[in-house]
Amino acid sequence: MPRPNKSKEHFQYFGSSLEVIRLVVMMCMKYPLSLRNVEDLLFERGIDICHETVRLWWNRLGPMFAAEIRRKWVATLRQHTQWRWHLDEVYVKINGAMHYLWRAVDHEGEVLESYVTKTRDKAAALKFVKKAMKRFSRPKTVVTDGLRSYGAALNEVRNANRQEMGHWLNNRAEDSHQRFRCGGGL
Image 1 (spheres, rainbow, N blue to C red):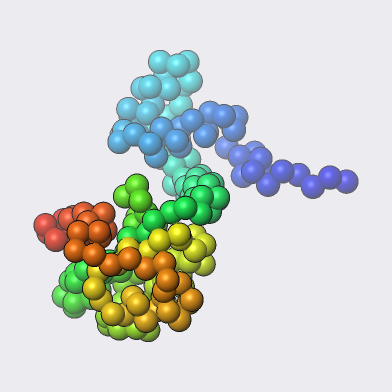
Image 2: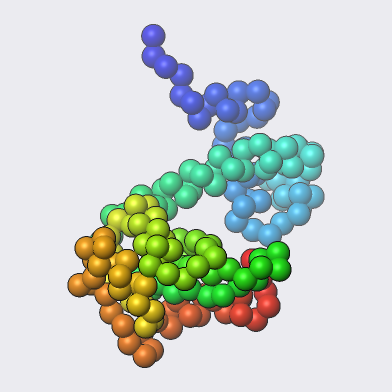
């Protein structure tokens, strides 16, 4: 007996088709719409549902769709090995305590990985680099600032020959920190 499709099992008790539920949740994810705006847009398409139904579907199935999108995004990123990563850390205050926010940004400016630590040493850099490489594989080039912890961590994972350092090379990672430096916070 064939196993039922797991994705259809999630939707069998919601009283609507998979396509309608996916449309509703994706509208909530992609556009900054209120629940009533989604209800109105769907009514114009001939789908009559309540805004509370939209909220229920968003809360129940939104994380599942987000995980699916994230999985597909990571799979496409893993296929491209000629990436250029920009690694940087910034000092942020979280609940009154100062921490380091480590970030890996790709060549297009997308944040690949974030990691928060209390220290800025080799162990923290090594853990961050291993976490990023486990998820996205090895980059072709790693651009860093002058922090020696990066060199030590990359040397330990045998990727030190791919490291680039320069005065203006790491601007892509620095630009991704603007929200934190201007008081925008997390």
